[in-house]
Image (cartoon, rainbow, N blue to C red; front, side, top):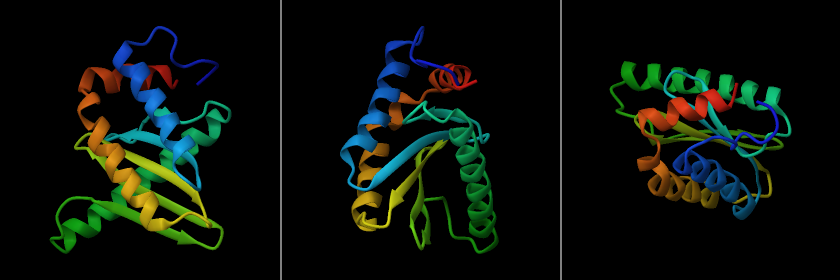
Length: 144
């Protein structure tokens, strides 16, 4: 992930990346957001300032989704809505965007957890249709 990751992308892929950045800018307390595909690979990051950090966060999101999915299957709890990790210094929240992608967010302790979760749900509802298999593949390539 180097420089401007929107160069050469389709308008739909560019819009998704822009909306992800806008989500972070407009959601109180959110400091970082990433989109991860069902296979655990980074699709998009709200910032390209720390490429290694975004890849690390994608790996954490992938692991958490795997653990949550295992628990859901074992206890017949259905599909993923949210994974919330409440830490001393803030929150780590994951929600489904579509069947093939999830949104991972880091938020400060001062953020309203309910507000962040609501905004994530609304974001997913607005952008889920954008993440077609072709767009996901295109975005993945831009993150390498």
